[in-house]
Length: 226
Ligand code: JEK
Image: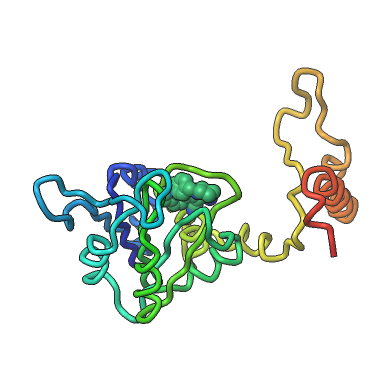
């Protein structure tokens, strides 16, 4: 998979060279290229934003600079992803879908976001997805891209030779995870639940299912509504 990221803060993505993404790159499963949007801006000020038509607070990123940056990156096979608080919710299902793509391009906005004509224009040429990582507001697309990419890359077939945990994930029925325990058996007066030491695999499976249901009811009752 090839990934291009366009941002006015490309140094944010230095973090991709560590841990998870670093291993994916070493295995040559993913190749990430980060581009400075300002390199495509004109004039001495290299301005990338302007005041919003219709008025209102803040600035909007101009379509011309985004067009100049994105034109050479996009082909009809690319998927253009635009993080925005007004996007569809990015989910595990979205991550699994995008893990099968050959080329992802992420357009990281700042300020109040990107002139909507950028999405309108590229929708005529490629698949464009406006995505949000959750119902809260952050200052730009960069951190959203880091979260999405980490979720996507760990699902690429062959990543870290780790099919087992992914098989378990695919079996999950929309419930929250059961709690996990490791050594020591006793820690600061707190014991590991007895059933996990029993060796009774059916009892363990049943206990974990009960824990998942109870935890989902307490933390995420919305997941049980159907
Ligand atoms: C991309 C710029 C910042 C801040 C104005 C007015 C109510 C806010 C854009 N889950 C997510 N949250 N935030 C983002 C995200 C934020 C971004 C950009 C993604 C580019 N910003 C910003 C304020 C406003 N809005 C109406 C909401 C817009 C995100 C994702 N993914």
